[in-house]
Picture 1 (cartoon, one colour):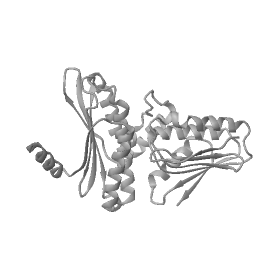
Picture 2 (cartoon, each protein chain N blue to C red):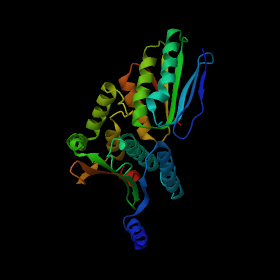
Picture 3 (cartoon, helix red, strand yellow):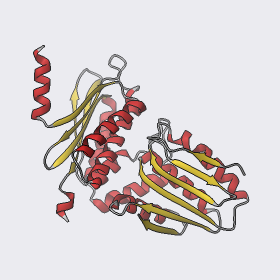
Picture 4 (spheres, each protein chain N blue to C red):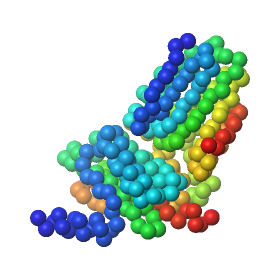
Length: 120
Length: 183
């Protein structure tokens, strides 16, 4: 499968989706102008990946900030992951960032995917 | 030219650190955000407060961007965005024209949000994120809820009649700088 490797910017996150090396990661800031447009290739990639996934998928979210439109798309990503057996989510939050910790907690209540919370 | 001095005095009196009036785009949103971030940074603001202010600003600015063009034909880009900083709080204010027929819906939404406690807001957030698709303009319908949650305070708002068909909608969110001390 092709690798998605997006450099992060001021308003878009860094994203790596690399099936053969087992790296699945979204990090940084997410407040794109057109959120749906920005995340469409990511969701499409995950749909294709879901057809022949690795036996284990560890998906890392290490977000510093995301806007409310992105939160909707993050839920869409999690919904895709929900359908992939052997998926776990690693949810990173800065140790003094209660809001990010809480956001992860809420996502974990909305989908049936095991979450691992990590303070950094 | 006295208005320049008056404007300057008002900014000082009202503790305003940023006033932006004009066109609202994603590029401008990014600039306004980074200016305010730098200002908070140089003042040595606590990171949790910085993040909350940033959160509220983004939702506010992106609201204006998304709804700017549907504002009024004869007054395009006539929105304003203001950040005030006092000893005890930041005050984030936006103002933009809206059609009068939208007032009822908007105030109902804001009153609903203001009527909820922390747990109620969390439940409303979850309900909206689960059941709502992104709008054509790319909004999730979560902006006000998020502003109320991140600030932990009521959203103050006001509609000022401008013409027969339009009003000026002002929205103010306060972020306490005393958060660390409350606990």
